[in-house]
Image 1: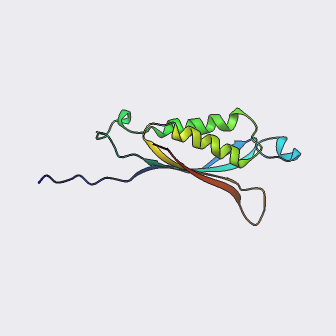
Image 2: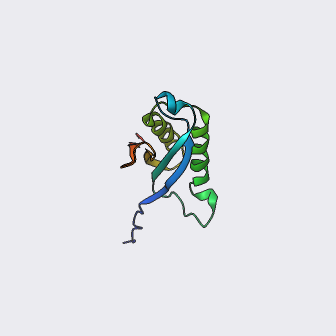
Image 3: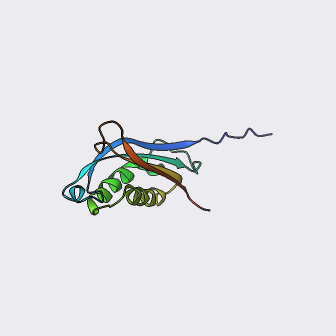
Amino acid sequence: MAAQTPEMDRRIFIRDFRLQVSIGIHDFEKEGPQTVVVNVDLHLAPAEKAHRDRIANVLNYDVVHDGIVALAKSRHFNLQETLVEAILDLCLEQPGVIEARVSTEKPDVYRDCRVGYEARRRVSR
């Protein structure tokens, strides 16, 4: 009997990514960008082939990082929920991503806490 190769749980993450984003519903929030902290956790499908130490065989996280930067600069977002949904869309378009969890925080809203939003979405197969 041949030995089975154990399935590996694979994830890529981006943590504490600080961006300047035009976001918010209040008039003062529309006057200029504010700091938003983004966290992304991507659950990847089992590898179809060995990575062989080649970027072409894995998810290039530059695409996700740069895509988030482009989204943040693209427009004004009224809600953190809308920004998170856009980032989820971007992440789930990437090859091999089967689930994404994205959170945003606005660290400067209150002095005594951070406020944010988090959502998780799985690719339907």
